[in-house]
Length: 355
Ligand SMILES: Nc1ncnc2c1ncn2[C@@H]1O[C@H](COP(=O)(O)OP(=O)(O)OP(=O)(O)O)[C@@H](O)[C@H]1O
Image (cartoon, rainbow, N blue to C red; front, top):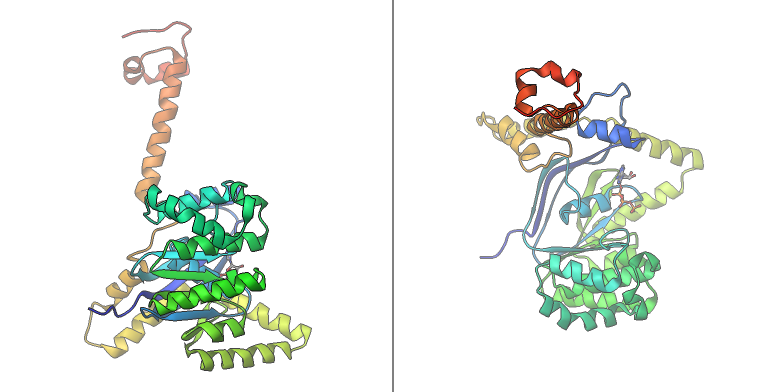
């Protein structure tokens, strides 16, 4: 049976809490109320998108519009705040900023990523020389990745990603840092992938690269899906927008960006859920179960980044038990003594009392 889609993203949002300190972060994790209001920012405000098998989908948009956030959610690096993400197959992401462990050497990174993709050590040994040769990083392969230039990181990331043969390849701005020779090698490899019928998500600021490689393009604009469609149509509209923006004065540009960011700060997930529910109810007014179905669509497959009530209770119970056992230990009395006479904890003894 032919698959209908390879990636399906429905009503996906991503909220970031803009913590200033680690303690604010911890308090929020334990859901402890804080005096200060933590500002929020919605990096994605309800994206729905389908990518077909064998399709190369481009993601474009100005800086900070949410392209990397979306590609990281699809590749499973970060969770969405609401919505559903259905990915059929393994993904491999090549991004300048993600994917490689800084403290490990290039060789160790190759092994780790390949093992995570389910390959055996024998398969990895066999493939290792090809990856090293494609990445063209010479003796640096045995140096920690933190010593690599951005071009070297990108080359290694790209070499690993294409050699582990994923079903879905996600390339996030990785071609913008290499030299011309490497760029051509990557384009050849991507073309090869396309010929094999693999699915590719290609994030780039270069309209030339997007036009050369993509079948369809999604334009993400300040957290919203502005347009999705054939490459020529979307890139033309996007180009017009970029030209319009460039024509603004410095003051007008700042005002425009501030307005967009304000919309992202003040986005209401409740209002958005209500709107989606109403849209569905218009199509199917008889169906009384729509509100609960939409609630499931929004929160059914979401892993909370905050502690659930059950986990909070468990954590507090473990903490209290730990403190209790420490106090019993220090008091010099046995547990049984303390349980029958708790005030003994307040009068520690110098000698050990056995029951
Ligand atoms: N961990 C984070 N904490 C807070 N805000 C974040 C975090 N990660 C991303 N953001 C914000 O989310 C928005 C989208 O960022 P993202 O990196 O997805 O955009 P982008 O379109 O890929 O940008 P670029 O083209 O510059 O790579 C930005 O405003 C960014 O500041």
